[in-house]
Image (cartoon, rainbow, N blue to C red; front, side):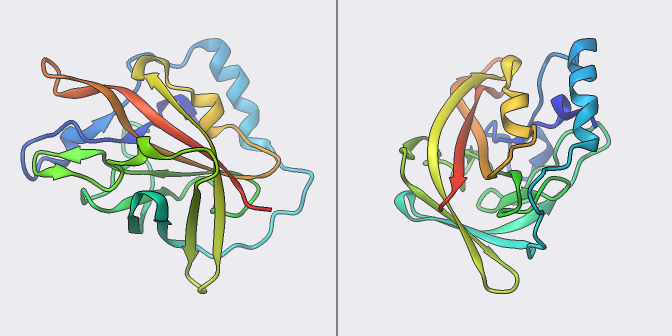
Length: 199
């Protein structure tokens, strides 16, 4: 699995209906060293039990007023994460772990559109200690606590920090950030929120 090619759903304020224009991917390819390091991820198994966790259905972030159903996202033909079909709906990367299982669950969403703010427009306002609740299909929920926010140029996306296995249940929220480059029609950075399961 070429994790470095799995990036995020962001908006680049495309024309109405042009959802594909919102996809952002790294401009650099996986190096040989990266490929060797990531090869072991396929076979990683935590020493801790991996509980059977129901599928996630929605995400709620009270401090920034986000309530969204979660679309199940896979990968497209180029190996990038599919993007949510609507601006106001977030998506869960279903080839990764489910929120609440050991490892990094990844949820992505658009920051804006040509029509205005999108589901993760206020993500940059999150602060350490803010809570993120993920509801699951059996009615249970997993609550995560924000640890930190990081902003990175898209050419330096923190692939390892976002996708590599962790020994605890964690959550990553990803959207676009930084300056909007009108010459390319895309934001230059990605914003990543790192959160841990509330104990």
